Length: 386
Image (tube, rainbow, N blue to C red; front, side, top):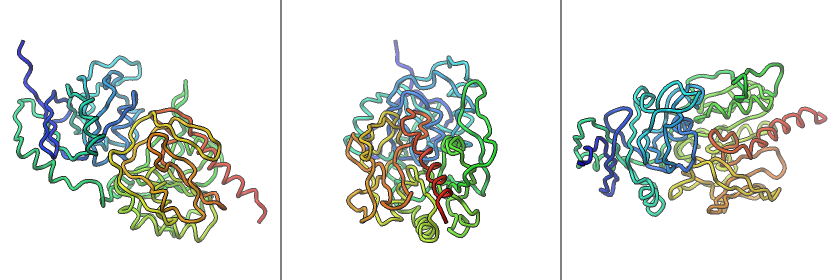
């Protein structure tokens, strides 16, 4: 039997080509290529703003078999540029599904390619680092290979790139929706709560839901918010969200704000992912680009203060260089995969952050206690004598 004609092509900057079956939107796009090992949550991953500027290779072959639902979106639209899968998506088999992955990608303007040897591609990413690629989908199977390779080589990469400005909210807003729970789904937080200002560097909705579920009255501000704008809300706590791009580039405007807040007030501060990296920069540390990053829902992280090992969800291509942390900053968590830094705190103040995603979505809930710790820190501060 003759093989079907390829309708999609993935071109790496080194000239390596992968042909497959296209689905979703047509056209082409360029990005950095990463791989994610999560077995569930492909829709949450595609809509996570932290994936801006990246195409995701899913190592788990069954992608698309639970369809899509608006309840699983982490943002208004997908931020990952495209997806690479081993097997073509099948018809969904899930009671929550409202549509297929193929139709969802088409509506959202994102390209998918199936029929790829994702094991080979993942090995290449691990050995050579995250490559720059061009992904094209043409139902007629007509590709200008030289042009695709040139586009891949012309992609500037994520180092030095501030993407938080591209994915942040345009104006401030309040958030009161809590985590999904059977049988009511998403419910609203009621009554008084700890006043928290959350800086949106690319915040996932489930992070905001976790803050609300922990008893926080959340006001979200854009990434460019100044210390004056933050403190104008008279917050009891400051939250620094996840997000995409190079933390050093985002830090040009984010770090001065964090430093001024730390200097002006003693409110608790909690950061996740990019927020963790920005806090480290504000405290005097440095960040570096990783070879291929951490992307998945099965990453073991050790809490050095309790001795506990947590299985966590991660998504980052930069990391805090623990060797540059100054006196007074304690390393609290490390990855058991490669020893990289996964958490810090100040010795004498409730200021801390983690690299992993305690809200998961997708992933295990081992680290949810960090939201409760943040809420408790605000409660303790309010109860302390003046």
